[in-house]
Each structure stands twice: as structure tokens, then as C-alpha cells.
Image (tube, rainbow, N blue to C red; front, top):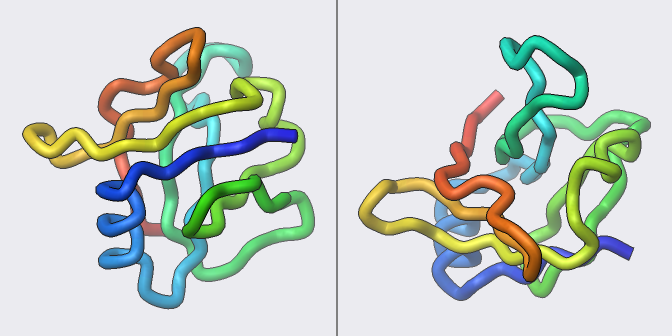
Length: 105
């Protein structure tokens, strides 16, 4: 089971900007040249679709498309990079995205 631990700063930031939208973590391959080359991105979306699954977190719900689970580690941490104004997604094994955007769609 995948689990994302949100730091206190990540929780505060997500709560501040979320409103009525859902937080969705995607593996964005647009412009990367291949379906297995991509970058993790956080989205704020109005509606979920039938392929979205809830990821276990310690606070704010996060959703993902089921077929993209393979691109992520089972245990991850989401934090805020204050000086860069973005998020960081990491696991015990790697930094998945040191400067992850939050995009409203």
C-alpha cells in the first residue's frame, strides 16, 4: 500500500490553496519523449475520474491514477521548499522531484 507522509508545512500549504478541489499526484510524461520518462506533478482538480485511487496520507487526501502507481515508491514524503515556492517529493531511496509544481486544472 502506498503511503505519503505530509510534513506540517505541506499540510498547511495544501489546506491554504485546496479549496473545494482534489489534490492529485501524477506522473507527467508530456514532452518527455517516452511514456516511461516523466516527472511527478501535483494537480488541483475539480473532479476525480473512475481510474483515480486514494493514496494513504496522514492528512490531506491525495489521489492518483491507478496505472501510474508503478512510477512511485511505496513510502514517500511531501514537503515544501520555502525558498523555491514549490514542493519536494522524496522516498527513503531517492528524491522523486526536488522542485515539484502544484498546477490548477
